[in-house]
Image 1: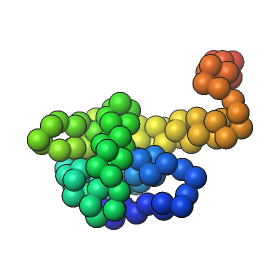
Image 2 (image 1 turned 90 degrees about the vertical axis):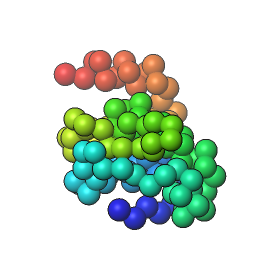
Image 3 (image 1 turned 60 degrees about the vertical axis):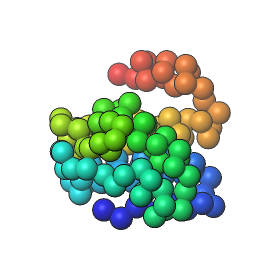
Length: 116
């Protein structure tokens, strides 16, 4: 899977990377147990800071999509189905849109709770 970033975009680079990996899982391009490139390698190929890639990997780990271990790299986690990845992407998109509209997380959470 080829990843690309747009340094001129409003969306942070780490968010762009995470979204592309999330999308790859959702489309079935990345499958359970598949190893992602090493963070240093990916950072060099995208011409971004290593910490940017590590932030993206941490975001995906927190969503339960990746297993990240020091020295072993990032692997698509068992049980991280394309359905989970799609849902995580939708949630991410909603949060991002809410931020653009000035809706805080607490207000967004209330809106979600109140939705039938």
